[in-house]
Image 1 (spheres, rainbow, N blue to C red):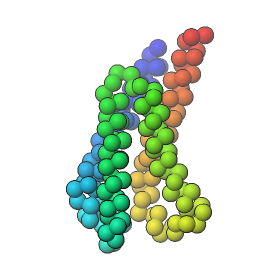
Image 2: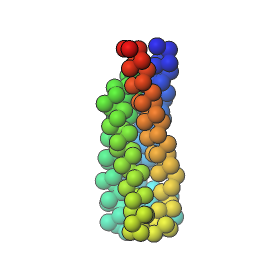
Image 3: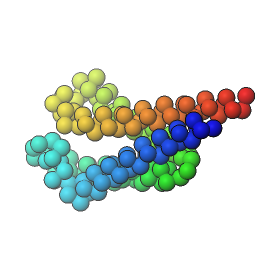
Length: 142
């Protein structure tokens, strides 16, 4: 079961990195929304967008806390890992669908590319490790 332990370690590290980075960015967005908005977009942002980004940052902070809780466990609970995957995947798929529906100009999506790639990469690692974990467990039971 060494391979299962390795997969769990990969999940723990991935969740810890996500939790630390997303948590820090969320706190900055809640505390210094104008500065973060200018840093991300490079321009002034409407007040309504600032308020919306603060609300989103609060939800993202909760997601970061879930990631950190799962990362501190020797075997990250599968339900928490799946919940993290679902939340991150939805956060990446939403803007992509908006772009495909031509409801969102590419210029508006551009400042968020790094965050979308980061979330997508974490979601992909979680998906792959979850599927490999399940395959290892099935093989051990057979």
